[in-house]
Image (cartoon, rainbow, N blue to C red; front, side, top):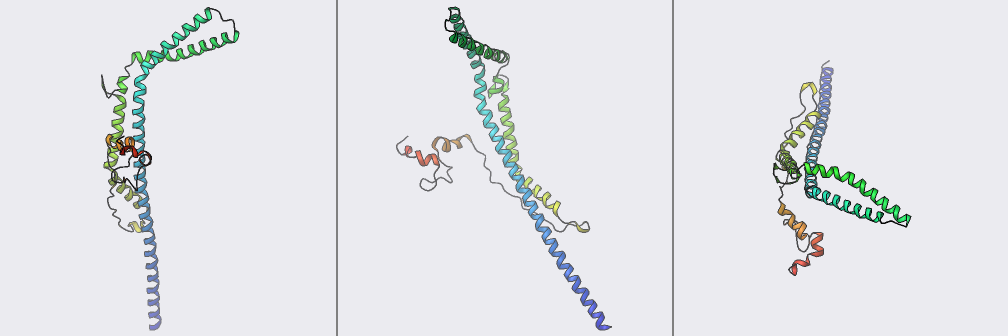
Length: 246
């Protein structure tokens, strides 16, 4: 009886030991999965934030490129209308003088029809630009204040700045959410406590002068540019111009 009792106690201890080892291994796997899920959640948020910043920058460039186009639309529309009307007048005089060749006559008629179709499109545009001051959109300091395009660009720039300013905290928060969802909650208790560090995102706000080196001179940024071993492609091809004062 004594030996049997000792054997049962030893067997129970071995069973509990095996169960504890299995539970610890399971919790370790779950903890690793939670850490991986948190890292994926944080990195995905950072990637989405970088995409937002990049797309805002692209849209700002598009708006800047549209400023000159829209600013020239009233004059170009009016000048095109005047030109078309003068061509139509000249074609009318040519038709009135008589065109013996039927092929030439047909071509003149087709041209007149095309010009009239274009005028039907251009005249409503000219009326709109006459009634609406396009400077309210294109001018940085328009008669009515800041232009709408520039307001939009300032808004996107503010979104970029807010994204960068809060990127570390929000990445940490997303890490916590991703890890928390995947943590084991056996008996209503968390399997582990995870305290991720606040990540620092190396982002630098640029200035217009930053474009001088890559665009004007074809050079890489100062920190990475090297005249012998690490040169930009434009600088590698045309860099000799700097040596002769070009």
